[in-house]
Image 1 (tube, rainbow, N blue to C red):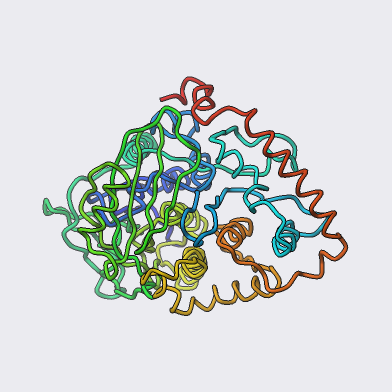
Image 2: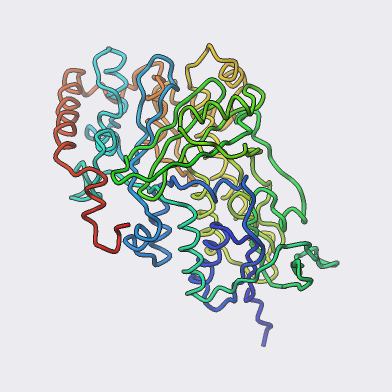
Length: 500
């Protein structure tokens, strides 16, 4: 009989939100394995641990984990969110909303945005987000769960959440323990490698003990305490994403939190505002080459009326091979990016799903880890492109920071997407996309980008016909929003378990 080579001992390094989420996910989906969490919480530069504003994918992750939405909301003080208001990114143009879901409705088989772009060139069209149900609800401070038949306005959007990340971490800790995850206290002081294979054999803890395993999952933040012992290859994205500092400030929770957070551009980067029932969150993301830490602190204090903590240094980029030998880096250990568009925890959750789907045996065959790394790189780089998109299409020529960003050619993959769009409004979509075509269009059109020429596929629809259908849709959405409950009122209508 052949030797059983299945992975039975999984060690998760990093006792923070990402590590506990990884441990719980692995234990739930591979119940025959022993899963142990070791080490302390990641440092302050592990942004996935600190950002409570989350993409719609978090609801799917929680559902797949067997977590009830009502329980998550009760334990974390969460509230619903429908998108982000971007203010000051496009010069004199008005603020726009990047909401989650569809913008407009197809004209037959023709994409709505092509009709909108034609009408925009003629100078007679409402803002693009006026045709997105989620954006209209968000601007009005309203929320209901998606509902109705496919094609109806209230069925065509998704929602994310705002929550207290500290409460979420403690909820995940309790759930991991419930599933049988073992916690071993004590900081990691060293990593022992096998002399013949270079695989990780054991982690040494501060009390002098060591713990071995078959697979090591590094969730220790950008330091990557375990994965970095195997190699230090890292792809730096600083030329495209030059913000290298983040300031955080807190605030009180709100009984009626807005379903719309804000990302406000400023002379050396951008700042955010968001709130849940449990807490408020403010932050400033900036380039230290263009703004001193002292002045950054004054900017955030003035905007938030709160005292910021110490600035956090970040190095944006990704580990070249997050999975190498028998060690896989997850979350900030693999990809470090600013919180623009809130993808930090999403990338960790996505990597966990991919890890379980591709779980090898103890040999960790290179052909299997290669495929994991290929998909992970494709996803991370597409998120990078989406973030860079905000900078390269911004219109702030008076600021040195924004002129410097505009002077750097974008990544080749983003340049290709921009080239296709600018030619006739088309966009490529790839297998490992985090953001939909609607999201890309929300930013492109919201920041004033229009294709050079009208795609001939819409010639079957005269402009007056397009205008008539668009006006009907806009007016319907505008009339519908005030009839729905506010975000706070809807939260109070949820089952008792979901209320704070």
